[in-house]
Image (cartoon, rainbow, N blue to C red; front, side, top):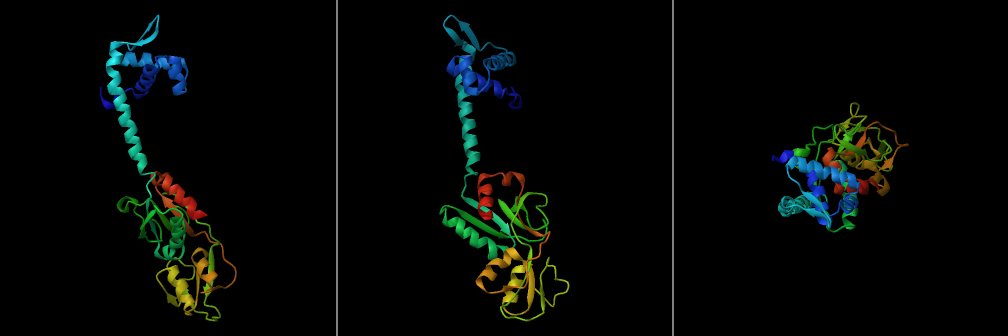
Length: 266
């Protein structure tokens, strides 16, 4: 019989019924009715063209045909269990590969990973640089990524969850009165900027150095504002843009990825 035609449900019922020599107890184990067990056994007998059980005055007995197939069947189920354990081992792996924009990694991600790792010494992280704009810089297949962080209006083609943020905030060095605009790709003031830098993180650093003021994601600037490196000029401005934790559906469903997403959101 071809592998694609194997009656796996019927074989599972056969294993349970043979162990208990009772359709009722097999039904209890499988959480079905005794009638359903009997139907599965009859269907399996029809498929195989043999009688598997015989009712006698002493109760239910396996036929020689049923007995002959039982040992390899149980060995097969043991192999199935081993296969499932091997596949689940990746779910419990303590190694995660993450891609994120360089400025977000430096100013937001690494401090949080340090806190998460301090709570679990077995965790291992591989950090890769990803283009923060769109999907172009995130290739889950080539980099074997578990999770990525992108800048945009949503998760794009993947599953995702937004990082909580108040939008954009304008920052400058403490005491600075400079009206010079510092721009960065994706920034709201980039087109009118006098000074342009590679990313929002460098815009914050340029503002801290006294080169001017920069409108940047509040998420990136929060630590520098708290440390006094820069000050916020006015209140944050809501934005449709933001940072998103993203992954294709298979990676997103992994236990280790879900745990990391939850920890990063705390």
